[in-house]
Image 1 (cartoon, one colour):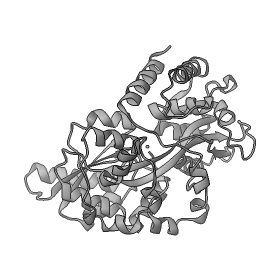
Image 2 (spheres, one colour):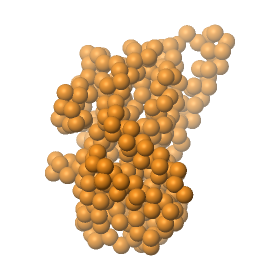
Image 3 (cartoon, helix red, strand yellow):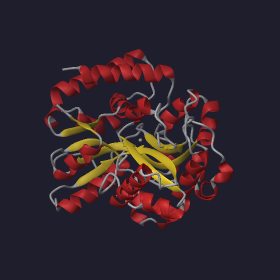
Image 4 (spheres, one colour):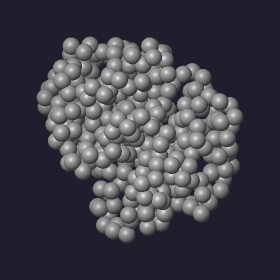
Length: 370
């Protein structure tokens, strides 16, 4: 799973980390290092500074990644907290790459985590699904839908039909004006959802159809691939439509306001059968600062900190107290905070060695195609 309004990392956090590095180089800094590995543009600009003020025994080293698949190969490096999506969490549990949490060290999580996350089927295997919250704490969540400029793209009001919505990204009339995430599960998921199939299918015929569709899209529509760059392309009017996480829709609206692009009427629509995704805080097996990792996760569940991150990044908070403080126009939007009825129409991504291998093969073939 993503994403924010201003800088990748806050100026304050950068200054803090630079000062810490300088002190460390002279041997004068006795603070414990705490290494955080998070999505790009996925934290409020002053959160790290506030954490270091609340916990002066730690100095934070903050690093970022763009997708789950670009994060995964780097996990041989040492991090104390990582923030993968739920399907990657399941993979990391199976591979023993993350370690169990001590919930007694997470009182804020116990108090404020929305109970809905106790009932999510995070994995196809019920026993694995039941283990997820022993290893991972929800940070932010989102849905996957289409953002589009209603002045350029015409969609029936209120439609949730996947074939109708995603057709915008496969219609040659929109060539050169569409964006696709450079992310395996999201892009393959869009193709499968458009074709009427489960976003977790392992049916070879269905997967072959999705592969052919994505190859044709690349050849005929020349989509812009990326993640964070697509937000700027949509806000500037360079693109007419793109796949998007729901939180990115909020970010794009903010950027459109900043640019003064009043001629863009940016809308977000959520197809039935699409994905909803939970990004989760975990502690890798090779982490060096187990206590500090728990302090950081618990700090992120302070209601004001959770609210600040939710509002800055644009994604949905699992913190009940923070949600109550949100603008009702945001917390009442079923695309950002789906009702039980909407959740029932969506899927989470599942993970297995077979899924990872086959979907990676498909995506690599798409990317290598002419």
